[in-house]
Image (cartoon, rainbow, N blue to C red):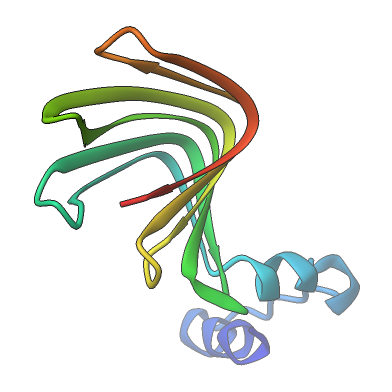
Length: 128
């Protein structure tokens, strides 16, 4: 960060002073990427599509395989008794673990299924 400030001053011939105390190092070290209106789409272990939309999302340096999301909705497909069922999901928060290929939903979780099933819970994990 300091190198970027010095390099900028060299190229522009201006000296830019930013006090170190004004830089939020916690935010810099904890948030690797931030996204708004993030959309994720993929294929689950059964070859069925899933989609996830989040109002905001982020990755952190200490857990690069996990995408942390807020205000989440999406769709997944599952099979039960030979029937293909589409689940519409929504939750306040989610953690999409790319390495384990699962989605942990928490905070006012609602699932409405095409077969009429409805689930309301505080936390749920979906294996994709």
